[in-house]
Image (cartoon, rainbow, N blue to C red; front, side, top):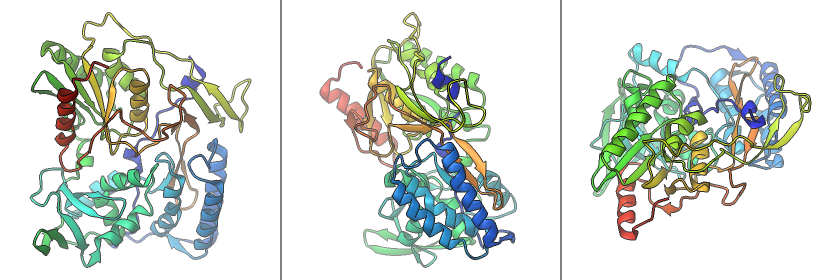
Length: 463
């Protein structure tokens, strides 16, 4: 087993990032923490970041962090509830510029389910937030189609929508402003609830061609789409194969984690059996909504069917040696540098091997292990990347440690290693597709159709 394999742990995905939340007027009374307790948590946070992270200034400058620490410390000189403390600590999240590093409130799913079970309601729509602060309706809260899809919201209960967006974006983690906007977009209903409360009615002003329109919408009792993926039907919403016209197929993989890995392997084998039997010539693998997971999911469930040469998931790495990870040559506290020496051999004799044209769609939420997957297929030529780029670092952090602050019990997440892509190249620094296509947040098939049209028009060769 390689050094890197030994240090590799399950990478926290963007699904965890969405745990961010702040005060809710309807929440039970919270304990109030003294300035001394808050300051102790602050010191603990700084100590843990220095203990775990190999380079806290990796994606930002140490001077930027120092100034942010000074501002945060100045805020912690008055008593606060946990929600108030979260809002203070979470101002660090955007500055880390890493969707694997943030402060959050834990147990968000349980909190939301309990709220709904008790008869509570939530903001009734899934929305798309832009970097500039625009909020547009994507779907109903449960992901079902909405008659208002595509409409821009100008006000929510008398508050300018841009103000709502900017207040929440200022607490959201992510590699880039674009990624932070997309992370927030998937959980705006939760963030709004924890910040502004959960009224029974929402008075909205939406932009229509004829001018602004006022509408009143009831708060929703529906289960948000992201929570529903954990239910009995979650597997089929996470993993799908669709056979398309002209001998094409769309394989959607919205996560590289599933509790029953054998179920995913069985799905993959069945999918590639159908691909073979249908004589598919163009395969599109869609990971635009995939926030990551475990590398073995894509090694065993995807590359086992398309790889035609040995591959590895990275090249060089840097890691912080923490307790329980020391060795004869690496002591606790060391910053160690090394190379990935674990290669995976292809299986050319696989009767389900696909050798047609293969494309991987990347986009708004491609992250963590899904970025490693896209790096591998691009660097080794197993597929061509298509879609929208510029959201996430190709140089990914990992080995995430989840640490509870001692007084407020907020959760601090810190990565302990950084992995370079297999080629070793660091430019471009962000995911850059070979075929750049628009990625509509309102219709997932727009990009698929655009890619198929590109393939027809250019007569692209196989990867």
